[in-house]
Image 1 (spheres, protein in one colour):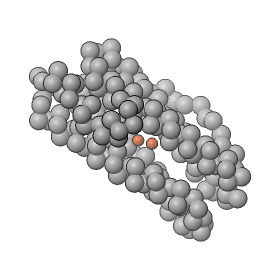
Image 2 (cartoon, rainbow, N blue to C red):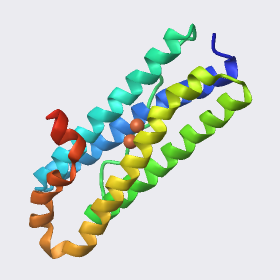
Image 3 (tube, rainbow, N blue to C red):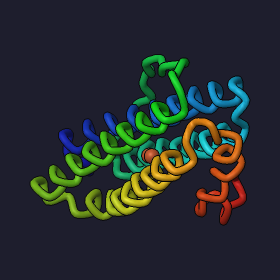
Length: 169
Ligand SMILES: [Fe+2]
Ligand SMILES: [Fe+2]
């Protein structure tokens, strides 16, 4: 059984992963409208991954005798001043998610809930990868510059190793 404190934090994470998915969907839609199909495809694939994270938390809570609650989501931003700002917002959001999962992992140790701690380890590894991949994108953006967005948009999918392996991008 999950202790209430851990269950509540896991439900908070359900909301955060679901919101992440919606945020990246909104960004993908913005990129698609603005003639950036590569960036859009990267973000749509990212949104799919976040939906998988969302489902993993739901199923874990229920599997451990808790009750996963499907929350209401706040509306993600729908307009972005440019690609650089968009990716710096992706990075900021991923850093927020990392700290959120770290916080739950800390509480699982306090509560001696080693099963949930073990469940969270996969996410902690995933966050390291996600942050690194977004930092790589931001570095490439600085190299190509706004004048070469066509080239960047064409190349971004080659930076997405995981989706290339799973064939989702
Ligand atoms: Fe996630
Ligand atoms: Fe993420």
